[in-house]
Length: 297
Image 1 (cartoon, rainbow, N blue to C red):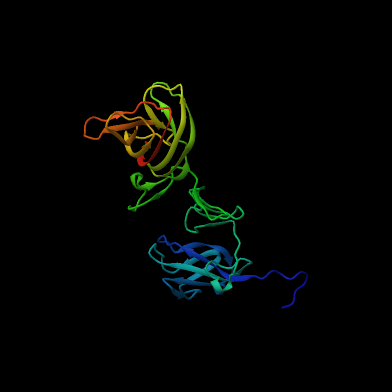
Image 2: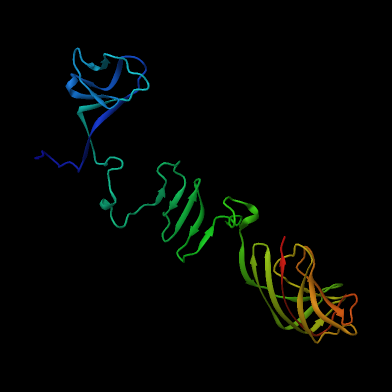
């Protein structure tokens, strides 16, 4: 087809359609003015009606008059043959996957039938964000690491709904620095070995440490091992091995404890023949290795 001036953009054509909701009346208003019945097709309950005087309906301008009333239970619609609608946008549902490019670019992918505030957000370079209710809840960064927007968020195991007691919201690995603290006055130590590691999963902390001191000054009281990475929720005992520390007569030291709501606790010795355990007095030199597990608050 020839054109005068610039050629129009590729367009898609469809016929305008009007749905009429019956109210028990015979006359209804059309969305377009027509001059004769031949300009429209009328369907009632999916049966095409014949227009004209003495037939199913007549038209005059924007008024269509049926010979019988149309009720709310009737399915009635009008197709305007003389009203072609042209647009550069294809009709909904008309584009198949074969017509789509291999790489489709978009900043957001939100649900069509939802309220439009939840989906995948691709607006940041090399980052995938998962938006819910208008804000980002999880982010997948360029290194492939997935992390939440808040530390209170996590993953629920063993349930089918968001349940606080089943939500894992913390995992952490790290190092800590153990030290000797006097129970009376803290004092200061000189250390040749002072290393500690931990793994925290939820509220559970698993730890190990190695501690050797070659001199200890100004402290008094009993030996506390301190510096644990988190306070304990309740008093907790763990296993130790000691060297070079003066113990009570016929005593061994195989346990220590972390005090409740604290990150330190006493080193303990126990009589080999049974009896009450007791704290160990500060010593100027010594070594302790330990490992265990405790719960945080």
